[in-house]
Image 1 (cartoon, one colour):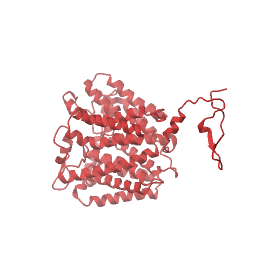
Image 2 (tube, one colour):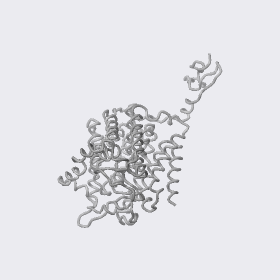
Image 3 (cartoon, one colour):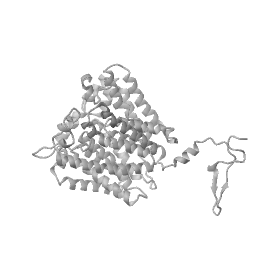
Image 4 (cartoon, one colour):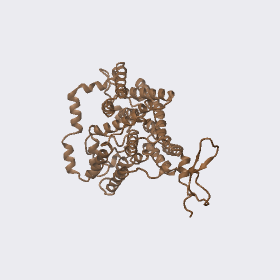
Amino acid sequence: MDIAFFAIALTGAFLATLRSLGWGFLAVIAVGYFSGVIRANFLGVFTTFMFDGAVLGLYLGFFFRKSLRAKGVGPGPARGFVLFLIAWPAFLCAIPVNHFLIQCVGLRATVWFLPVLLIATRLTTADLALLARGMAVLNLVALAGGIYVFENGVEALYPKNAITQIIYMSHDVGGRIKYHRVPSTFLSAAAYGGTMLMTLPFLLGRLLGLKVRLADRCLAVAGVVAAVGGLLMCGARSPLVMLALTLAIAWLLSRLSLTMGLIGVVLVVGGLRFASTSERFQRASTLEDTEMVGNRIAASANASFLDLLGRYPLGAGMGSAASIPYFLADVAPEPIGMENEYCRILVDQGWFGLGGWLAFIVWLFVRPPPSRPADPWRFGVVLLYSLALASWVTAFIGTGLLFSIPGTVLLLTQMGVLVTVRNQGMVPEAVDSRTEDLDDLEVEADPDEVLVEDLRVVPGHDLPVNQAKPAAGRD
């Protein structure tokens, strides 16, 4: 039966992408919202990779579309960076260090999602608006799932098995009586909180955008409330730290904008008010313990990173630092590394892989997005930039940035949009696909014929007036 979930995810994402790129991304993200609870209740190889199936559907749908959107993927240096970040791990995978299947799993965790970044460079303002609407609805559904787990316990949705161990181990929320963290429909509370955080730039960008209907603004507000509620309910602290850093960066980039400052104040005050309603929403208050925070950071970023840097110039073999599925546990190597995303990249890919990622990150973030008053996604782009930057700045205190479901796809989508903004200055407006197809036609005409696009309508006339030369290709 588990193959049915994989087939539905692949087919749904494929058909959605054929409709539009925005729908394709939304389909993939939707699968990510529910894959955790499905995997927990239907153990199997195909449910383990159902999210990968949805991503495959996005890839196939993108390249099958009869549109110029499938041409020139990843303009500029971004394409070269991504191709290197795929080619180098693929080369390392061919070196037999670990079990072949383990190396394939490591390669999948390293490169499978990366083309999402290139495809995301083709997203338009209409696509982002669609994504914001969809994310608002999905966040409300996730909030409902979180409330259900909050009231009835994790046992109500998640049976004890090999892939729910982390859910049952996370039993550290509350005061005298300890409760489990709330994963909602995800496989961990951190995945729930991280996903809610990743949706905020899209929702706030839509809320503050230009020429947005009142109904869309209200839906965006509901999505933001659901996201903040999920951030506090899940019990994970890292997403809250990243949110604070994101708001600080965004405020500075907007030149201390009153609007951006008010966003931060409203989110903080609303979050504190919500957290005061239950002791179970106050796990973030443990961040006041500076000794605990210092120990936590030291455990993730310490001198042993330098030891690994000298020990594994070419990495320790693909899969040595990857999360291994339960059905391959018998051939999995002893994990190497620390709770540090940069360390994980180093152990799997060595100096060249880590250097490639650092070079790409510097290239992408060295130039902040321009502020264009007429850009309908002006505030949204600033928030996308700030959150993506905050994610990489804090990557040294945790892992999962590049293999979280669906958080990684959301992050790479943000980075793809930022690549477009870096190259074009703003998110492009939607282009009618019929116009694209006309541009792609080879027109053959008689000397007296002219191209359709070379006609214009003169005021006061009912018919277009020819302002063009004869069609090219004839003497």
